[in-house]
Image (cartoon, rainbow, N blue to C red; front, top):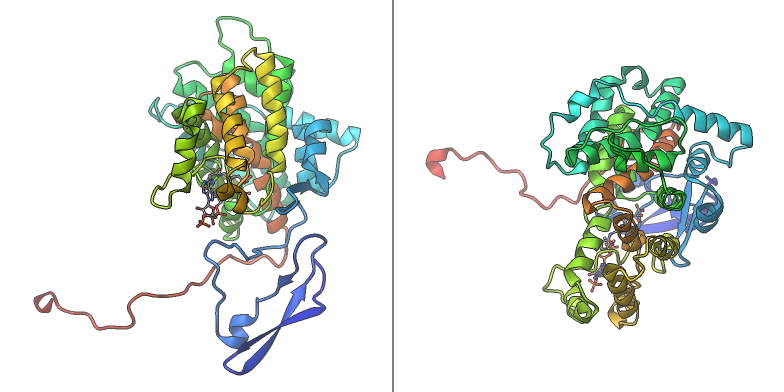
Length: 431
Ligand code: SDX
């Protein structure tokens, strides 16, 4: 982070305060208000954090106006095309692309830590079969702090590394087992001779009754979906992980908090909500009815998979996802998939409607991902768990960056209090 050279002047009740202005390596300058309350006895007010930088970070940069997303400086479309998820994990965690030896060692570490403590099998059995897989993931990941005590000390560098590898390696097993549990099928154990994405597909779709061959094109599409969801700056779930971590809570509990936040339909739950919306629309001729509802201020309905707090242009991930959707559906011979037809017609209709164009509401990462996942055989309830699996590395990278900052302090926002001012207690006889 650059040292402040410029300043901003705030004048309140005739008194002026000089606030340092810091310039980043990319993106807008920031006004440093850390001393504002001490100097001027006022708070700033920004409930949705639309104008607030909560931290400094070197991991991911988004230019919402241009529709750009960089991971440690590398554009997401290049990473999606040329890299693969575990290499992107290494990049996010350690700051640069690995050499061949570094990548081999990282992939070996992840491969040999995919199994869960066998006692966790019984933990799964405590859930109802119809539990949402996100409820199971939130519970199981939080419970990891009860099974992996030796990697909960956040002040121990080695323990942090062990927790990092454990979470990245075990998340596919945890997600796949949540799926298997919900459909009443036996758990399938990971295999060390499969790559990360193939292992996940096999753990989800293999059954003991027969061999299961992973389709390499589907494995590539799966890996690309993991890459496209890996990290995204200070989004709601990442900010949740950072805030939880700032109290010194162990990494498993903090990642569980991130999973809980991601579940919301305005955030990671949007991929499930998008597919349910496309199914509800059903046919292209019903699109105008839903566009009208999305524009109607008295109707809470919004177009799921559209809009973004930061992107006021196409979400670059949605572009790559759209290409993948075409490839996968063609491979599966379902390129006349009615849901995909509705999605493409809806995108066209919305983008030509001034309401969406004026508000810069473009398709986001969740708009096409659900179509691919459904075509691959996943139920909608597994869409957000797959998002959580992919985002684990982003949460951990941001957690590590914050925890290792000696200046880290507990996050404790203030408020604009609008409640009752001081008043005396009234005995019940007098009320
Ligand atoms: C993710 O933060 C991240 O980086 C998140 C994420 C990540 O990788 O971590 O990218 C993943 O969460 C993607 C977003 C997935 N969510 C959805 O697809 C749900 C549908 N989208 C909306 O809920 C909404 O667009 C948000 C929540 C995504 C963004 O909301 P904002 O920035 O708070 O926008 P807003 O509510 O201020 O809306 C501005 C205007 C409003 O209209 P006006 O009051 O100006 O007349 O746009 C309208 C809104 O009503 N609007 C929509 C709309 N989204 C915003 N109208 C119809 N349909 C929509 N989807």
